Image 1 (cartoon, helix red, strand yellow):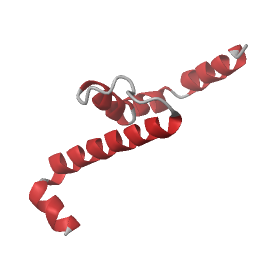
Image 2 (tube, helix red, strand yellow; image 1 turned 45 degrees about the vertical axis):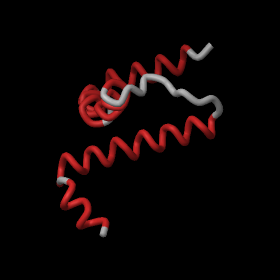
Image 3 (spheres, one colour; image 1 turned 90 degrees about the vertical axis):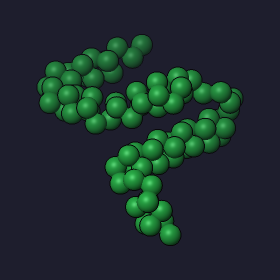
Length: 81
C-alpha cells in the first residue's frame, strides 16, 4: 500500500549516508536515553493529550539532566535565579 514511500525513503538513505550517520549520533541518542535510562519504553496513560503531557515531562527531565551534567547545579541555579 505504501511501498512507494518506503522506496523513496530508502533512496534518500542511499543518496545521503552522511546524513544518516549524523542523525544516528545526534537525534537517536536522546530517544535511546529516554527509553533505557529513564525507563520510558512505552507510555503509561491513554489518549493523545495525556501522552503528550507524559512526553513533555520526560523531555523536560532529560533536558534538565543534560544541563546539570554540562554546567552543574550551581550554575543552573544562578542562571535561573
